Structure formats: C-alpha cells, structure tokens
Amino acid sequence: MKRAIVTALVCMSAAAIRADIIMDATNLNGAFDTSATGSGARTFDQTPNWYNIGTGNQTATAVNDTLSAAPASGWNAVISDNGLGGAVVHSVNTGYTLQLGDYFNISYDWRDAAGWEANDQVRVAVAAYDNDNAVTGTEIWREWVLDKVTTAATWESVSGQTAAVSASAAGRTLFIQTYGINGGLGSGDFARVDNIVVAVVPEPGTLALFSLGLVVLAVIRKRG
Image 1 (cartoon, rainbow, N blue to C red):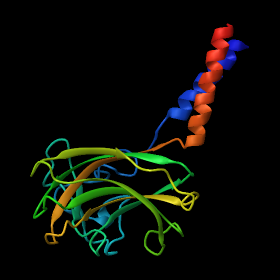
Image 2 (tube, rainbow, N blue to C red; image 1 turned 180 degrees about the vertical axis):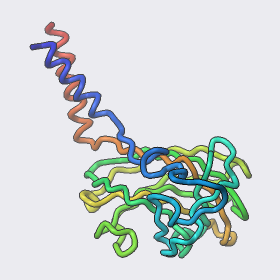
Image 3 (cartoon, rainbow, N blue to C red; image 1 turned 30 degrees about the horizontal axis):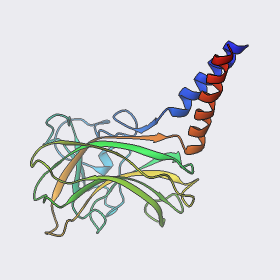
Image 4 (cartoon, rainbow, N blue to C red; image 1 turned 90 degrees about the horizontal axis):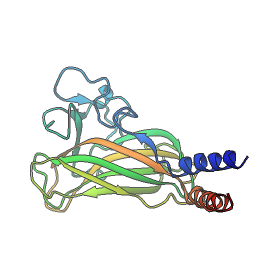
C-alpha cells in the first residue's frame, strides 16, 4: 500500500512540473516548414496555421527561405518593424484554453534583414481576445519575449518566460503571434523569425499540489 502511495505521488509530481509544448516544429508549424515545397517566398495562404491579422491580406508574404543559415532551416517568417502599426502580423489560434495562473516559456531564433535597425524589436507574443477572435475581438491580455540586434546579419537565439495569465483572460483561447516594433529611426525594415517554441507551465495551484506531494512523500519515507 505504501509503495502504491509513493508511486502515485511521484507520478502526480512529475505531471505537475511538466511544461506542455503548445508550439514547436511539429506542433502548429512553429518552424514555418509544414507543407513547404519548392523554394522562395510563400504567402500566408500557403503557410499552414499562420494567419495575417495585421493587414488581413492572406496573399502577403509570410515566409521565405533566403536566409536559412543555422540554426534556422528551410523557411522562416518575414516580419516588419511596424507590426502593430498596420503591417503584417503572424498569428496562430492554438485552440488552447487559458487557465488562471498559466505562464509560458518562449524561445525562438531570429536575425535582422533589410534595413533593420539596432533599436527595432522583434517579439514573439502570447495573447487573448474577449471573443476568441484576433481580428474582430478586443485584446484583453498580452505577454511577449523580445530581443534587439546584438550581432548584425547573424541568427540569434532568444528565450524567456511570461508573467502569469490574468483573471480577465482565463477561459479565453491562446493566440501566438510574431511581429516587429519600430524603434523610432524609420519604418519599412525587416527581420526573420524561426523555430518558435511555446510551452505552458502549470499554474501555481498545481505547483502547490506538487510541493504538498513531495512533503507527504518525505513523511512516508521517514516512517518507512
């Protein structure tokens, strides 16, 4: 009986600390290569999962394969530095329902391209809308991981963690987006993004359960 309890607690603890992958190369086309054939630029219509919520034009260029040195490979997203000012915004409806206290580990690779300036920013964001529609809805929550140029014309790897999901966003659908932010020295600049990985981390209540499980496990071992 004691062994069964210990086993159950270990399993519960392992589940509690697991970060579940929502997007990567094989989930939701985080590497932008799904169904890609041939070479050259591809539109949003030709890029599974990704939708242009910035201009709404799904025949706009979404990806290209012209800057694919390691760690990038194949196609990567083409973003501009005016993503929230009327330019293209890459967006995915993940279908994941946000829970209060969820937070996200985000990583991606990126590099500057034509005209990109040192104070422009590239962002990969998680967001929610009041009607679960990124086009017609009102944004109620957004968190992001950003980076600026540190080495020109070089792919750079970025990772970070968001703040927890707010009460207003709990129960809403998670969207993952990538876009650029203008640093104030002129617009119309471009960058590339690839290999987006987003994982949800258990909310604090689950982590508290995990901690309790470890305490009980320690007591059982001591008595044993």
